[in-house]
Image 1 (cartoon, rainbow, N blue to C red):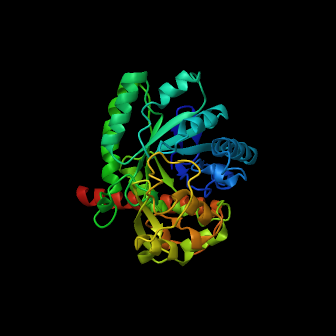
Image 2: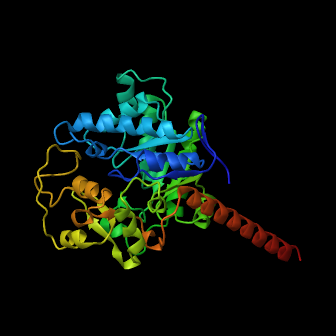
Image 3: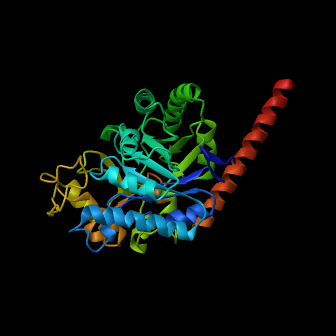
Length: 375
């Protein structure tokens, strides 16, 4: 298994932990993954809800909480730490600046097109900085759009690209009808994106890793998607049922107790489909029943809070604290395969062992076929 290189940053293992909000992946989970040789990721989504004054000083609380979690993660590991920041967040630019100021290794930007981010950072005086910038897309076409814009406007391209397929958990960059049934295979999305990225790699003389996400659960899955051209993988669901995950145990047990039929798609107030574990709260939402709330600020630019049937940030924060009656768990399509709570180190060891076993198996198969052809 090769290491993952993003510019001058090198992770021993090609494993990136998914950034999961609200408050599912903070410094605890991120540092544990980083200590095992992967890239640990803190989710910035509504991170200020972990601060007591969030309802009064939401912007300041978000910045303070992100700074706190980055610094705490740094105190727990010498490994590589990243931050996941949604472009849909009203204060996404402020949070990106905090991450860069804290010299975070990697910022992953998704849930929108991060077209003006390099310009914003330059305008703010950040020209030569340590942080690598990765974009999250759902297709090669989207990757091309971002890379072309950055190349023409800023004479640079992203340092990495994450391709998240339709089997991922949480908010999905697809239409509702595209995330169930016969979905577009992840390997097709990877192959398309690799083709587009290669053009820009040649133009700028740099290597841009393509990281696969969505529906990857085992080391065998890793091996297969990396054979399709992915440089690394990003896993979220697999790291939720761990002792180090920052969510309450009740949240983690939601994964353990769910069955395949419990994983469903909801229409999020932000206008995107979302994959969740069905519970009583979700059942009420699916029936069209509303959950009245007061919006203290429009935290998501794509959310029409005056018409929203419930507050997605509040529901997710409640769930992270184990209050499942007033929230729900986002989850990938494979969450039902969870059977127990493990340590991050055990998950990583399983992935590496399974990957190596599949590689050896494929090499043996290739050798037999070669011998047959020679005969």
